[in-house]
Amino acid sequence: MVVLSQEERVSSQHEKRDHWFRDIVAYGPWTGLIILIPIAIIAWITLPLLSKLKSAANEVIIYTSQDQEYAEPIFNEFTKQTGIKVRAVYDNEAAKTVGLVNRLIAEKNNPQCDVFWNNEEFRTRQLAREGIISNKWISFGSRTRCIVVNTNLLPLAKAPHDCLSLVDEKYSRKVALAYPLFGTTSTHFLALQQRWTDVIWKSWCQRLAANKPFVVDGNSVVVKMVGRGEACLGLTDSDDIRAGQREGLPIANVDLAQDGLSIPNTVAIVRLSPHPAAAEILLQYLGSTPVHAALEQAGALTCQGTVGDAFLDETNPDSGTVEDWNRMLANQNTNLEFLKGLFLR
Image (cartoon, rainbow, N blue to C red):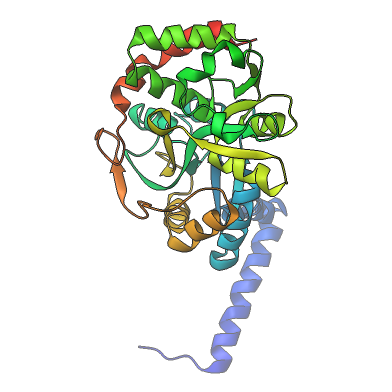
């Protein structure tokens, strides 16, 4: 093996450099450009992609029907702890949950979302059945469907404790409810249909509509309307009643007993999500005890009997509920069309 001295190595390098310049002189200045232009193009294309990939690894996209006032502080704390930025898309009060569900369905072949945090269970099961989210998800906490009463207008002792009483003539033009085509109101109506016979349920819906209720854009609007005395009572969710009470509204919660409905939050990862690793980290975070405690303290839900990190199987109708979800899903479109004819303005 020939070992070159330092002077010989420097001389060799200078010789190679001189050959390169001689080639440019011999073949023209375009020789250098031919070499440099492809390198510049590759750098122009790849550097932004590498930057984008680095950024993508540090973000997660979530669609959520949980109220922004409750969810946003949790996302901020998640980012603080993990460095992963959360890009959240919230629903609107009028089309609660359904708008995000339809968006996920539309994006099925090109998912834009990583995680779906839903504050009611029925639509999550619908998405699992259609293969848009994983068949397993985290379920935690609960809210309940109940009656809200303006205590200045109706003493609690005289308030109804079941849904059938709401069609009494004395409550004509005195009841408020959200559109039963969306959100928890829709799930509640569909659950009542399977608990009662179809004949009783349809008769109740028709009589309720004939009683001229105030049909409004969301459960929080129901609470505000009852609190202002524009309606005497209404069907709504327990967390909205707690929020109204914190505002000082003269309202009270009436348990619906057998006609009520427990509504857990669910969190699921979207199939073929763009950021699967970050999605898994966020899902586990949202399933953690500190998050549940923060939501309970804020009044968003009650965590007694929470499932926590346990995963529920969409195909098991007995997983923490008495509802026959498969039957509800099978009859969903027919029953919603019936409700649309009665309540949609």
